[in-house]
Amino acid sequence: MSEIAQSLALAGELVAAGDAKLAEIVWLSLKVSLSATALSCVLGMPLGALLAVGRFPGRHSLIVLFNGLMGLPPVVVGLLVYLLLSRAGPLGQFGLLFTPAAMIIAQTVLITPIIAALTRQVIEDEWREYREQLRSLGASRMRAGRTLLWNARFSLTTAGLAGFGRAVAEVGAVMIVGGNIDGVTRVMTTTIALETSKGDLPLALALGAILVAVVLVINTGAFILRQWAERRWG
Amino acid sequence: MTALRFLLTALVVAMAQPSGAQAQQRFITVASTTSTEQSGLFGHLLPAFEKASGIRVRVVALGTGQALDLARRGDADVVFVHDPAAEEKFVAEAFGVKRQQVMYNDFILVGPKADPAKAAGQDILEGLRRVATTQAPFVSRGDKSGTHTAELRYWKAAGVDLATASGIRGPWYRDTGSGMGPALNTAASMNAYILADRGTWLNFRNRGELGIVVAGDQALFNQYGVILVNPAKHAHVKAADGQKFIDWIVSPAGQQAIAAYRIGGEQLFFPNAR
Image (cartoon, rainbow over all chains, first blue to last red; front, side, top):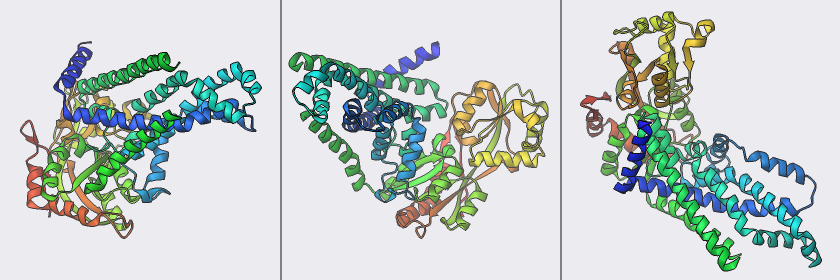
């Protein structure tokens, strides 16, 4: 137990010292994972709504597929995106490998299914409740999907946060496509993996505690924002 | 839909920022080994080169086998690794321009301080034989790294056949498929023997009950080489800047910087460029 206490103390010291290197790493983590979350919301939420209200052949298979893809292993996503972005790969000419953009792409692939699947569930419940009402207004399914997404916007923050949580916590994908390059693609999770490799377990655990704290701050922010927005526009 | 517009704008800003900064920065990508990164050598070496040349060096640290594969696909400009046979092959296949030797350090057999296999001494082959006959736990990298291929070479030379001796291999020989640091962590928690490079060991903190068991054998020599990836194979390779890095690292300035890197007064790498 003394080791864990020691790590927490070290985490406190690191934060109190306002280490510039640490700030840079935390900032990059946030930038990459928040970008991936935003991109995944833009892609995954309409997709989820489509799966909820749409009626087309293969819909059930797609629902099962997206539910299954929530368990996509990050290292597989990393490998896939690596092969796409590698110079020998189909998108190699853009030179995106080992850049933050590559990490954003990998995390977007990883969490879009999570956001789509959770959105589908939320919208399906809404659809059950408001179907008659929307139909009597003569709304098309397309129109209905958009209305329901807007209606459920506060509940959908949870889907976004689930995606963000997964993105900011994964190490397998960003390690492969980012390369853990010092000052360029080194984020919280890859730093923790590196310090573990060096056998500096207290520092690794301290960085883990900081990561958890950062995620909690983001979630608190989202919670307060939601409360405020619900009061204002809800 | 204002929320959507906000998200898209935020995304564009976030995406544009890093690539904008990268465009102004002159850099090369070096595929290297976990031993050079985890021993802290690059942290010491690269700032000096960057100051002298204005070229940033982005290091991707992998096992030697993986680093060479990455370069074969054209994802690096320079490789800096330690498996001479694999390096010669890389150059012979025309993926690399030319191999130059840079520095050496040595492998060491690390094991429990109590040394239950009585492997201590200066003879690596005898030490490994004793580990095998006593079936003391042994942790292998198992990841096609330079250290792993060296380990397999020593087992072969010691006359211990790991493939056919699967009966004895089972419980005591642990193939972990991991980098030097993670493998050392495993060995520390199992109190097992392990072949390591001295650099990573000196910088390794979580030693537990482990200490150096065999060191100083001529056979434990560990040579590092540097190779420019062939621009004829991959046109986008930054040949000029990559060559500048190679020229610097084999120059007196680079060689002195390597010799100056010490942990606790102990020198980790010995320059021997020719």
